Image (cartoon, rainbow, N blue to C red; front, side, top):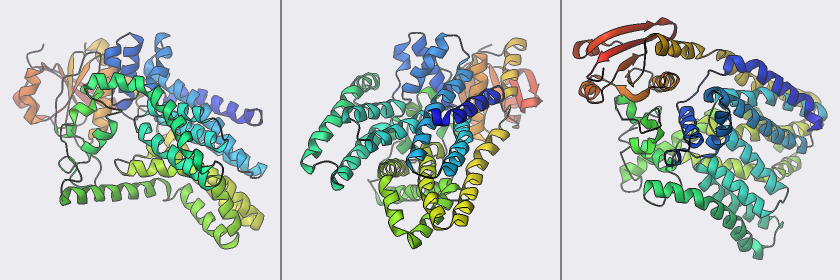
Length: 512
């Protein structure tokens, strides 16, 4: 801590400076679901708070902020900055353990500050917390900490994201087998160690499994994986190499449950189409294409014009000129590699999104800190050139992303309050289908969140009868023609908000 005190101060000062400009930005409607769940916990609505899709830990951590009266969207940013401190602390520890020179350590550690700040401020999801627990998991294995503690870490990973259940089972087994192969533990003790680690893991997971299973009326660890599998089926996403599409994009209205903004609080209930990739040759072929697409995505996340490419080039050079150093470096980071490979392989079986695989970005930094030191020892100029290029690429993306999102969605916040206070915007809301469904879905959720309204989803002309049945009060149009709406529905008022490219229609659908 003392060695990096100035970097931590730089981190917190930078976070405080950026907070007013980035506190409005929301990357995903998922953020609002975690906030909704946190509100339910804070208000004692435990039956509504328990959710088999959205894991609970990040919402639990939000509860104290909500109980203190903080605006939850803004409080989420503060929580992320706090989590980022622990991420940096672990990251600095691993860079220190690489035995690289002081100049290399300071340069890489300094460049990690904007990276973690971008994770914290631009992604209000549990992924930063999960990254922190991944690093803790690696440090526990590397430092030969008690398997009881490793099991507890596995529980934390599972309660952060449902994916953690499968991850821990696989990664822990591989790590123990590796330890036995390397002679760190006796082979005859493998079973006993696995029993102790898995025993505490399953014991502490059991209460949450009980609650979600009771709510879903069958045994379930998490519905996130099943939902992802059903989402990639050929009926919803026939082209595996296209962007992932969701059923709501085609116009699907759903009544929000109590104490929720929208039905998106239960995505597993919205994706009704089921499939099995192994029941036919066509399904299996489609699934193989999905996996291939995911592998290509992983490559694009880390090995394009990115730091991963520099690491690969350095490793190739070291393999050619200093093979012994190359092998020792990989051995020293074996548990980190096990964690990265397990995480990546499991995600490629379903859906890959960059934030799911931040552990790979961090692993690249840690591996590079060791590799570039060995390159410096071989040819100083080569090490300096590699380090300079790596630092530039490491800084470029987060700094660019932070700059692009300064005050992003601040006008959404302001306009939402204008809608609520001046135009009495409230009740049941839909948005119109357009060419940017992800943004539509996110911003419509955000408007409904700020105004205390209920979002019923995206509507098209085929949903006219549903607008009346659901007693919709207002329609949001994000720069989209609405001739069919004016033709089929009586419009009471048109509200133009050009600063956010939004037109709001108050309609007479029987609910006014």
